[in-house]
Length: 264
Image 1 (cartoon, one colour):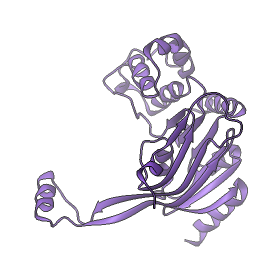
Image 2 (spheres, one colour):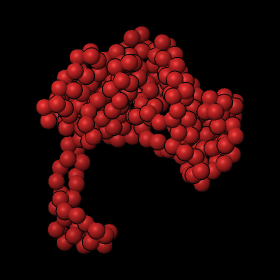
Image 3 (cartoon, helix red, strand yellow):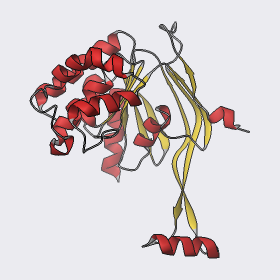
Image 4 (tube, one colour):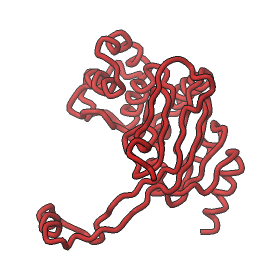
């Protein structure tokens, strides 16, 4: 039986971990409870819940997921929309607690899971650097020392004191990536973010990512861009309806993935 302690992520910090896996997932299950009928208002929801007429159906976002990622590995994740790819990253980043299973995450995690996540759109870019960095555990004093570098990397010097509600999606991507990679994380999780922005900035991000990797950062990249996966990932996972359909060398998994699309 899996206990509550089994589902709680274990975190260890410090120097390089002598080849201990950066990520270990064992038997991860994530179940959501969804209303089985459309409810148009909060009042209707409350009345149905009180009267016991609220019916739910179970949605398994992940089932029996096992995964081990070593420091310095670059792992791709592919699958159709709704397959469970983003759920997997949220479990690793501790945004989401699994229904059951064991999660071991060693070191600092930098999750780039959603464009604009952790930003306040009424604040300026500069203010959002401090806000977003605080979510990664950085103090305002640390941010102050590295603020100029963050702004320079994002190439947003002219716009940094404007409210970010005026930013384009590419500008948000620049700022989010610059903050998340202010320091080298032990684990970097990327969910389609590099698909946004101009080619030059994408190349700049990839340079930083590969530098991190060479120094031991474990990287997971979720993308629908097969070229991005094949060009950078050591191995790849194919997730289908919450289960691991295939795992192995990137070329082999992408071939199976393409054949699966052709058959459907």
